[in-house]
Length: 145
Image 1 (tube, rainbow, N blue to C red):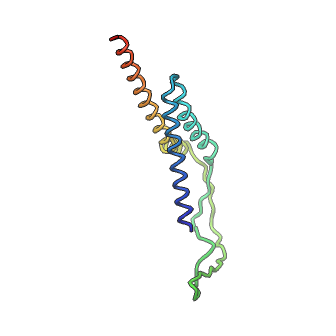
Image 2: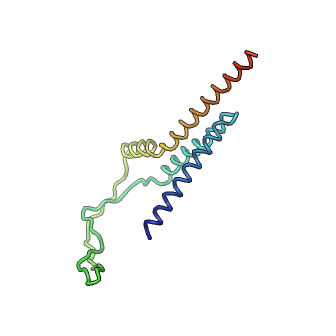
Image 3: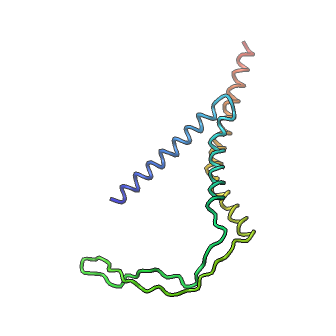
């Protein structure tokens, strides 16, 4: 049953991606060039605002990482019986992000998060170039007449 949910999510995700690509092609073919830049600008601003709003200024680390549950027995019905383990007291350190960590995380986020933006810009560039070539061909045909 869980495979069906995953397949439906993959299909829906594919439909959304195809719709965005088709819409980008449609907007890029418009007469005014700004229309084709709407989706890339929206995509870039979403990634940038997501980085600024969701990046923590500090984070906690622990030397003794353990889980709260351990499977100790398996019953006759192949059901796992979880056993609670008392949490161990470990030293937790809070580390502030320095300038290098912030710059590195920003660069990685911008590079990986804007892959979709780059694809939208490539679609825009190809469609605008194709539109300009078609326009030039029409002008040449009109001049020949």
